[in-house]
Image 1 (tube, rainbow over the protein chains, first blue to last red):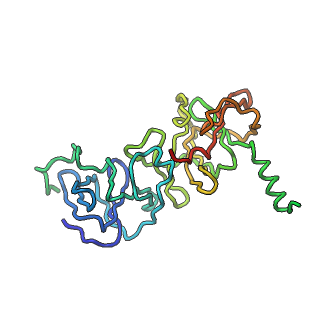
Image 2: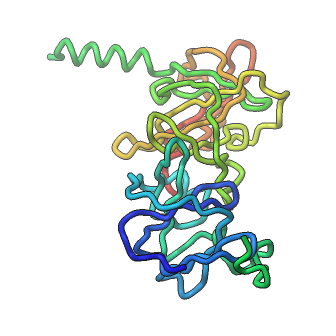
Image 3: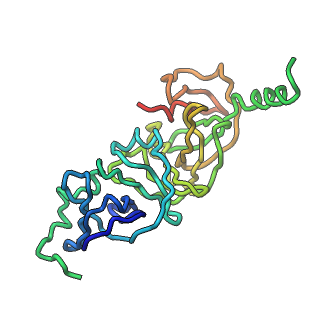
Length: 117
Length: 152
């Protein structure tokens, strides 16, 4: 399934957390066994993985990542936001966090299951 | 000549200086500068951040904004205490005044407001742990929240 370049953020769940990726950075989204693979521009062609796709929201108010977060979380991010009352980490498409990396994702690596609903 | 508002501000400031909120974090009692405390609320629901150090419990929502929540017990390396019956999140300002940020500190309980004279604080690391001071027969860790917001 291709994702049209549009405004908004793709919201997904991974590792118990909620993540947002600018829709404009998303090149593709596909079911891959029990999880989802997301192709984003700027990630060097590597896919991201998600447990669940929540959908697309038109807009998110993004707050910068606080220094205290950077001190205890060694990842880059475009910032933090809220969806409803749940915090969202807004992904920097050029430097996605390891938690979303498809490389080394074992539980989602079931290519034979592709397309299974 | 000092104006009335300046005098009132000065009086308020001097009242706050040395005034701390005492909280329990594991086996330790910690004193947080009251001027940096914004609110004490029932423990907020926290969403973990994969890959974060143990000190960062996760993210919560407070006042319509995302709020990073740190585990105070882990920050001060306190031995674990008994299961808290009324855990709280203390919402604080950290960092220098010109670039302060809001953080949540997950604590086992909020105890009381106490006065900790600056002269009674000894043996700190000059950073987040300002030092230790005797309060009501117990040695408490006096914390410098301004240092917590500094990068590096």
